[in-house]
Image (cartoon, rainbow, N blue to C red; front, side, top):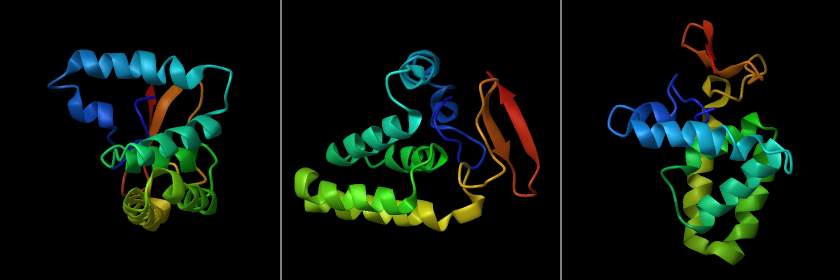
Length: 141
């Protein structure tokens, strides 16, 4: 799965040239095993991941997982409510930073992978890439 694509690239794509083993482990263990376990839905995993990233102030990864949360069925309102709730448990500065990052992700609107109705992840394809002209290409697992 490699995380939610943004501008046709995933976070794993960005590190594969310098850290191929880390990229492989991320694909195989994190997204290939942990995200596929049956005990939680992907939507719930996304909400948990977003909450953990906010609590730990991991702002570089947060936009990636906000996009994935939207793609996995979380609504912007639910994510805002989770961030508001976390302000009291993870800290006010963490929540303010998270809400500004969320605002940026939400503003991407239809241009953001995972926010378009016609872009879906499925069991056969790792991700669907949409370029600026609306051309789609499925990337096989």
